[in-house]
Image (cartoon, rainbow, N blue to C red; front, side):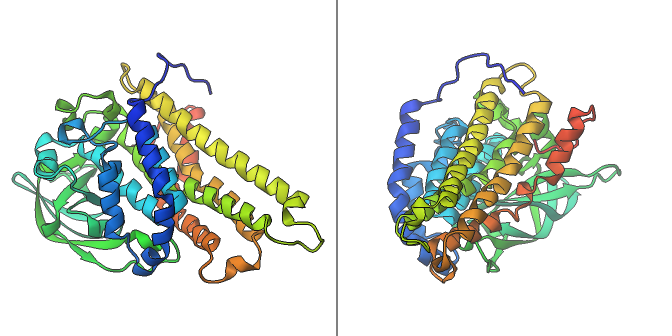
Length: 401
């Protein structure tokens, strides 16, 4: 597939982009130092969240009206990759929480103002599975439900929660995301996992809470690019379909984590003796494994950033990004974990006996990457079928692209 660009693509703000990348790189040693205690505590330290606020990481995709930078998504993902080289759990929380300002910019401005009006640094968590029970009432909805996997929720003052709205007159249900303040939900400490231990992906419980209409976001508006937030947020950045960005927030951390695994593998190979007098670095199998890992990681990043280039270039065009491209890009994003797992499994399998003991960093990363694969957005099966079917003349069946 070839792509034609209408203009030469450039960074939204190259100097700010470079500054944010430098800040992320400088944090890598600190994040590694905090990683073990974060895993033990099963949550990201408050100090790290504050560091990210001061660095401006949560503002990368936030609207300028509410203190954000409105940078292109390249910057966000490049920061996330570097953070993951320090701690994948931390990068996961940055991705999930840091992507929400983009969705908030699509909401009615009244909702945006309620979240950011008094404090532009306010953070929002989420759980998008449609597990809520909804009753349509005057002016909005009554919402109840129990959601899982709300990463970073204990650091946030608001939550985005998914549910289906069944029209009173009958017909097909409509998926919406409901925006609730912290006093309207409970957080249940349930996060005991094999990997991504520090993400604090707790359960969220809501009991018969009123949510006004303006604090909901229709999936159909996100898909059709008819978001009410366009009344105040005019940047073509927000014409990139919301679904395209969220799915990358939960796949990109695996790139940085797998890069770190490769670094550790190379360090180990240069410091271990194999069965012959030579170092493992002199073993041809080890050499091939390292070369293949580098090539695969390079290919993963190249595809992601190429797709961003296309989306940034075409988002403001009449008609926006072609549907076949949106479906292809969604499928590409779902493959990131599969490809990272392929690299991670080979590295771990050949890393030697020390990797199986508690406290091994390469083992922790291996478990983190495998845990990330469990997220529904990182399962390519349905996305491959949809893309293949469209190539054969069928209509798109995915509305989160």
